[in-house]
Length: 445
Image (cartoon, rainbow, N blue to C red):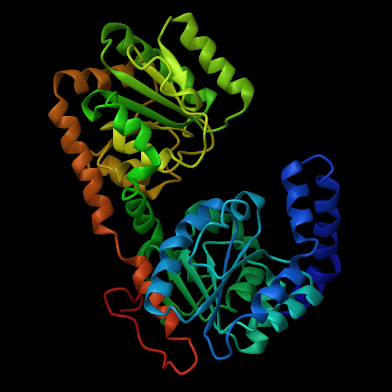
């Protein structure tokens, strides 16, 4: 441990973060929920682990929020399938993940991560006594990691990625990043390129592995949940060849995409459009409905479905958690976010064999780049460009289906990371001898 960093973090950073969170809670309901949830968290953890059988392997897996939880799901399922005797503690930083996790059966105990202070980290690990710690992608808390290393508890960073932009930002504090990352027994990167990006901060190629990205497994698993949209599929209103989905859209996306979609609906009454706003605020939903009313399109909200089933043209989704399943209803989709900070998940529609459109800011997504390279996705910047793709859909639908097939192939080629990682975690269970990973997934081979 770098003692200068240890003292700076605990004497300055931790008090500032603690005070800042309580001040921000006065203005941010999400932060306030997180603080309330932590109020009696340690007592709940103590009670939960007290029921665990002696000698059962203990896994502590931490995620930041909902997105990382989705990535963790196939790993946790694989662990429980291979070793049903193991006990899993799943911790969250954010309420958005914690509040949606309690129906997940593969975790034995779900809790907020206690604040990363010196004393709380010690108390937490005394209670849990994990055999192995696993964290998804990021959300690294130094006191926990330093204490895990001191106690000799293996720590694994999985689904690890490091963009070139982030590497540039970290270089001025590389000494501090190295001090935190060296606490990991192993780092499992999503690709060889990302593994190389870690080497300046984690100069241990023998402990750096390329095991793949668990998101592929999770999005594929989501395609096996038709019951979540059974009401829509059983209505018979939505045929893939005549249904377009605009998912995770922001107002900046709508300005470009909606004019082309409205022209499509005006000229082709038998086509359907499903709009899925990223933010389900009442104001945003009202604005969408006003735009549809101005053009006199027949529409309804999902919460009112099957209102107006006979002449329905547009369905507006006012419910969270089903977008990944909705993509089964279409063969051509648009994924939002890339007229803002960056495109949202393009893997979800790809797993359903959809051709994917997105805006100009998509370099944050390796999958979007790969879809473009395979002619399975396309970046659009204007309404006219969207309209040209829609016209191609009308005149040459087979070309759209072939593009969707290439998108699905990308998903199939990258399945299996979760099982590989679950197998690696089990080598750190009591009585298990650590084994080398297959050379096809080891970075240093």
